[in-house]
Amino acid sequence: MLLMSKKEEWFGNIRGDILAGMVVALALIPEAIAFSIIAGVDPKVGLYASFCIAVVIAFIGGRAGMISAATGAMALLMVTLVKDHGLQYLLAATILTGVLQIIAGYLKLGSLMSFVSRTVIIGFVNALAILIFMAQLPELTNVTWHVYALTTAGLAIIYLFPYVPKIGTLIPSPLVTIIVLTAVVLVMGIDVRTVGDMGQLPDTLPIFLWPDVPLNFETLAIIFPYSAALAAVGLLESLMTATIVDDMTDTDSDKNREAKGQGVANIASGCIGGMAGCAMIGQSVINIKSGGRGRLSTLVAGLLLLIMVVFMSDWIKVIPMAALVAVMIMVSIGTFNWESIGGLRTLPLSTNIVMLSTVIVVVWTHNLALGVFTGVLLASLFFANKISHFMYWDTSYDEESDTRSYKFTGQIFFNSADRLANAFDYKEEVKNVIIDVSHAHFWDITAVYALDKSVIKLRKMGKKVEVIGKNEASKTIIDRFGMHDKPEEIEKVMGGH
Image 1 (cartoon, helix red, strand yellow):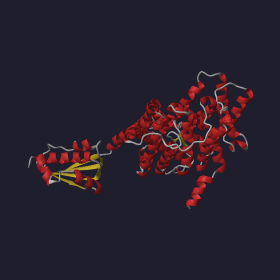
Image 2 (cartoon, rainbow, N blue to C red):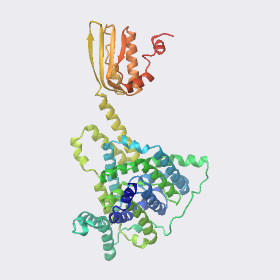
Image 3 (cartoon, helix red, strand yellow):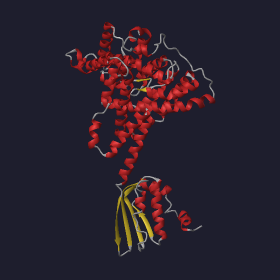
Image 4 (tube, one colour):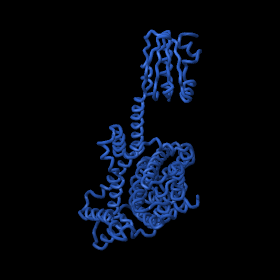
């Protein structure tokens, strides 16, 4: 069974995976160079990283068909480290990033994705789609009309080529776009910006390169803050991308295995002179939309990237940036969740606020982790507020025994605890009070404290109080942290010694 599963992951879609891998490899080149420039390092640092991470993750990642390489989100976190301490410290930080991600995988932190609501994921996706589009704008400003014409032609090929009989579904349209536009530029001699203008491509294969830094506590103090941030952002983006690819392919992925895989890939990258990276939503979408599904597509993308930049650089240099811009605009359009715009009119206000807040924070700060944290925090607050309204109570009075009964139903926690404490009429002249919580659930210490406060206040008023109906979970937390049934604690509170 395991062998069949592995065979399907690697060889279940050979033609589609190879063709999709070619498209991804071509699209990775300018991005890897651009991210290297952002980080302030030589283009080969990003290119070697993209090759290494893609190849390693193809074998040990937890999500088949997902593309991992050097990314802009990670590059932004490296700027200060490179500026202040240089490339060698970046390589050391990359290795430490990998170690932290492996630890996170073994601690099963991938399971935390269950706390990220679908609304936050939609906001994250929309923000990334906007960022991908914005990243293309420098290539479309202060340029000649030829660039606009080529980009428009590229988009036309991307969207219309699939309708061509027979071959339309055999060859990925982004690959056709890159080949056709490159041929047009070469034949017609059009002077436009090309991949070669992005930076110098490496002409040698990467070699093992242990970072040339002192192995002491001072080095650790310098790189640890950067590594911790890189590990967190890398895992967050990778796990979010895995969730999105899960949805696109209607398959599952192993998030904790993915965390470990990202860690091993970053350690390998740091050891061959590459920067830290993570999963790329844009390239993953290109891969899926180009027909890639298995691990072979990721492996092909990584290997072809290295082969092309080292051995075919003369051909790669002449690819017009307009062709790659057209591909990335297609990715941006395909990534954006257009249904969420219609949802603004029909979905609850709280849901829209969470989604829009995630989008605004990510786009404004370019910090994916901050945007997702904002979304998760708001979603949690709205959920807590909503669930607190499901706590209500009923009261009855038995004249014969002079007993007032309070029957609580629902969830009692920090946001509904005050409502429990305010439910009682402390000044009512009754002998007995029964608090029935058989249909209520106590979740936290704040809820226990509210019950304690209420019981003790009622007893101070001379009433005999009994709490009945605690379920097993509520009984555990109340018995452990409550004090209204502990005589020695009550004595202290009531004024005893």
